[in-house]
Length: 424
Image: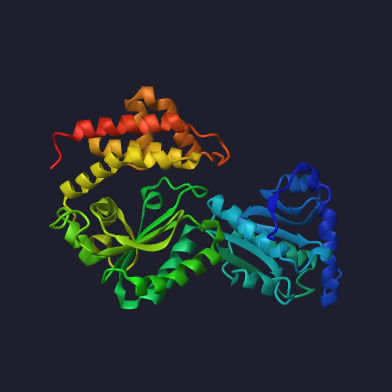
């Protein structure tokens, strides 16, 4: 059964220095010591950036600080009686998740290089040695030397990437290896590029452009890449969306739906997204919205610029596809039962309204502000959605489904009415 890691409560703090002292006793068995006495206090822990614990009473804890603008694992301690049960690993992963949700790109730590439950343990959990230290990390190492720790054993600084850049780098490397020459380009888009990315909430949106339509063999080749990515970056599990499309498929839809009834073209695309396992699905004109957006503003991770990798999508084709999205939202919203999905629905309709009615391509956050200003009668619900999404709303919060559903229906109709005279 996995260990539950939780934020420390005030009543936990008094016992943590005692736990730390007990954990330090393990070093003697490896010929290291005596260590300087533990000077940590409950008051000091209360001022930490975060303290995460396992157990009640605690059998392990991780103390997090901010160093050089990144997360720093200042202390990881597991009671000897609870050793070799996965408590330390659970705390490391929780620390990485905390750091990612705080918008940090990495977690650093200082540790003994040759003690099995120090540097080798962290290396197994994704940390690598860091030699290019920022000023605050250098100051920490100087303080350790003054305490005499270096005289007891070689010390190293280690780092683990936990933020979007680390995820994107690993994904690009993995897909490049799995797809080889089939991968023409990989592009980030969505909120990370638009500038309203919420580290604790937003998904990572990517488009992979390939040389041929995805098939079962391609799916089998990339499935291990996504499995490994979730294993290495648990904070991003269920928050990565990758659509894979052949350049020829985009070309076929670039000037409007291919000849014949919708769905008559047999090209497949491949997608993994929140709540949706990696799978193949038919290409449809709905996807043109994403392809056009990526061509206009996608950030290249592999290959040439998005404008070079993707054919031009006509403005009318992209507009028609977005109108179809708006037309379908009253159906989609019926399944939006969670508070997060409801917030997303409101913000998405605001963005579509700005694009189709005002002719402004805005981020969701900026679009919500614009919409609320233009339609003050809707401002309360729009600001609720924005506050929940960008200000750390709780998943346990009660949603506003009936209001959201009515808003989606109302706004969808307003957008469709305003565009009725200009649809192709």
